[in-house]
Image 1 (cartoon, one colour):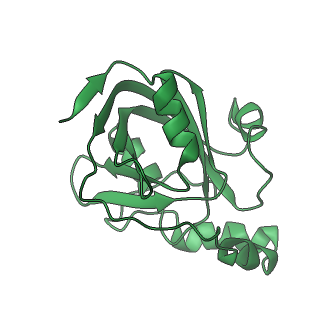
Image 2 (image 1 turned 90 degrees about the horizontal axis):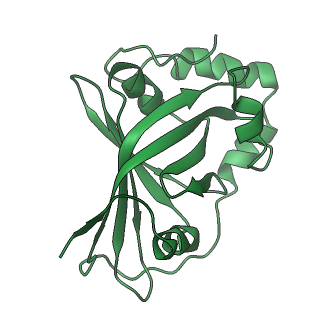
Length: 180
């Protein structure tokens, strides 16, 4: 049975910290809904109603484009280990880029990463837990090093060029606001 909460409780925060990945869901006013898995050391709970996460360069940039249209975001964690549970945070989010007010303070919460494209700052208006009884058991082996290898083979200019070529519009053709 699903349960709703007005904010993250201590047990919720601990659950989030124990997970190796999370999912982000966003949608624009029209077009496709996007659900994207995220990993690495990229998320921080800053309080009972606030989560920030650093978005690294990827093949798409749907979240940024959707937030320019409709300011809502859902984050989700699933337990793949002993305790079955799914946890979601619902709310609004703002998108920060390098040079924006607040970027330096929030970026300082994470390991330095040359391909940091955005930081999302979610204001939570509801938390929901549900059973997760059908989620399979899976064992965590390690984080992938593929992103770091890709970054290591690129100059800062190469990364920015990639953003312009591959990340400046959503798959529906909407702008993402990525710095040019």
